[in-house]
Length: 380
Image 1 (tube, rainbow, N blue to C red):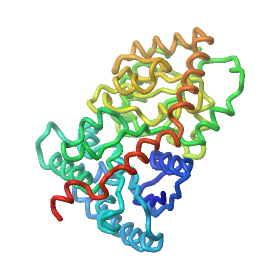
Image 2 (image 1 turned 30 degrees about the vertical axis):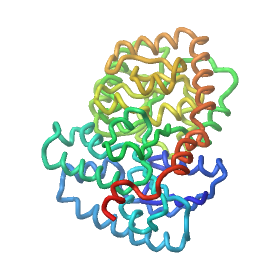
Image 3 (image 1 turned 180 degrees about the horizontal axis):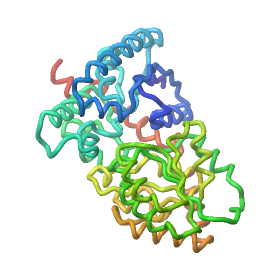
């Protein structure tokens, strides 16, 4: 197949689309990127919804990107399918208008706008103008797509009835650079403290308030060193909670090129620990990446994470800081246990999280799907 990877996605900020492109190419497909990154990250988009007077800036940025996308898509030529990258809620509408009706449009619907707004406390309950706006954005995006890609069975079940038949589950996975970082790890772990890493945007999904409490509990334990990478909504509260621990290193951010080696230099990669609705339904990118980098994985015991990782990770109840503390101490106490979970995570990643494996359900769905979404068939 010949694919166009289309939209304003930023593969450095959101690596999911990069994994899909890598996987399609590994499967033997041709992929041409028609991409004009929107110079606005997720936090910036959320800030605009908190402060609606900033929305004209988003409209201007989108208009600029879309003009370039329209020109470049004509130059790219025909395609068998179009992949609209993550955070493509608006881009998919443009794709539907630019490409002929028999070209399948595949939307990577990793998160819903409404779900993100609830998780970040942007909307309260199910009412209000902002909630209605988020649902309108989601509905329009889903109606524009022939295939809707989600990452967990829970997200598939949450799709509206008219979109569910077009849905397909594809794990987030990890790119080859993460597997390379894992392969480059020393065969024998050097002596010294247990090295733990967390990478994230400090949103309620991540549960960093509980992580901060766990770090405080570890303040007197010189066997465990923690690196916290990122900043975001709950960063200040997490750092304040962990202030008593002198063995925590805070790093504002690391480039996408440098991140795999940094994570692979640690023994344990932390997942998420939040108690929000969204936290119960996702398997975070950091879990796939940490496993590919051959770290032991410690994350919350939720249905999608347990299903994805099986017995190859260590789980703690969501929001349970003492359980997280106890798990990290157990790994510091037992090098053999640590090594076993590192091997198991790496094996699971090699078998199930590689890009070529992740895209198999998408390629199969596209091969058998109707080229025109049901919602559009009804209006034509």
